[in-house]
Length: 236
Image: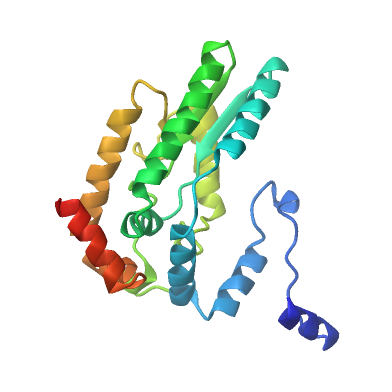
């Protein structure tokens, strides 16, 4: 903020980030390019965003109570509700694993599904989709692998581009479309959640095997001590 204030006073602030309301909910591309530039380049932004994502903490009980209350109020008003889990790049999901947050993520999904299932059983028109994990979209090659500085689906590992947003809307509101990969977007409910999470764990392990460069990159973001303790726990 101090740096921005100085550049404003000097008249060299450059581009201005416009509200997502001006882009139908999408982030301002000029703004995102500015953020990448401030971080150095796409390669550095990927490391920064991935590590920041892995530090995230799961929603608290209080947050889920507010969320459940909001769902209840919306259902009482007969509002049709579509919820989805963001498709951050597969590297961020891998980072959750190496930063010991995978179990917390699964608990969070269980809690989320419980709220949605309870609302549906009460007669609410509500659906929940999961676009995250390891699928045709989220496993796009990183610049570190492809040699290209720009990715088709992502700005960096935390923010996806508007073409991915369009696919999310198409899947949720128009069902399975031929132009969208079949593995992108799974509707969640309590009956299939355990199987879904089991498949996600399998796909995660396969991603680590089949993408050695990405795996070395994400492991390098955490200390040797963190990785060793986590690997020892997995062996036990």
